[in-house]
Length: 207
Image (cartoon, rainbow, N blue to C red; front, side, top):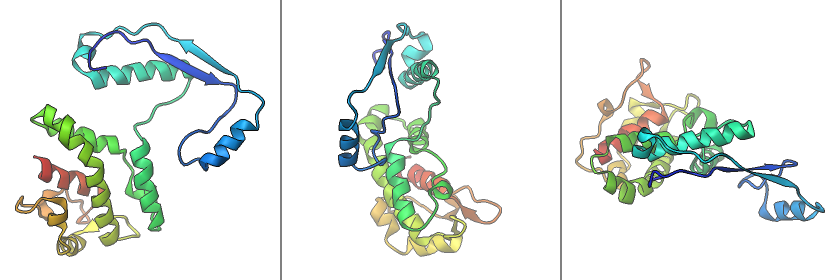
């Protein structure tokens, strides 16, 4: 979408549900299930060529999202910002006996867009920072899950101080950047969610 030229959207309709998505079952089981069917029928539809307007030419993400909406409408399905990174993060949380829906009630893409929106050097963001964000969030999640209130899935000021004593700044490579409790938007209960924690730390790291 970066070149800003017309796009030929193509959608595929299957005659039945075929679960090839990662995490739905083992790859061997999916292969055996597919082989057990004599044949599979699908319909390939070429949608009208999508010509981007001036705003879409200047903003590839806006362009891509609009094309996605056209494709979803043709298939009569919804869209979501949740992707494979969110599955990996949710799996980690679930293994710690916590509800992913309470800890990770936002898509990883929101973190990317938050940091992208604050980037001064977009070239550096795309080449260096963007690829590092998932590793950063995984590490932040590890610290958060270890020190948060498990019942509320929130981090208190006391929890935060305990976390800071575990070489947190060194691990995140933010030594001397002034991270403290006031770096976060604190709730009335004097605690923060993982989303506020992650974005707050990443703002300090990449600003």
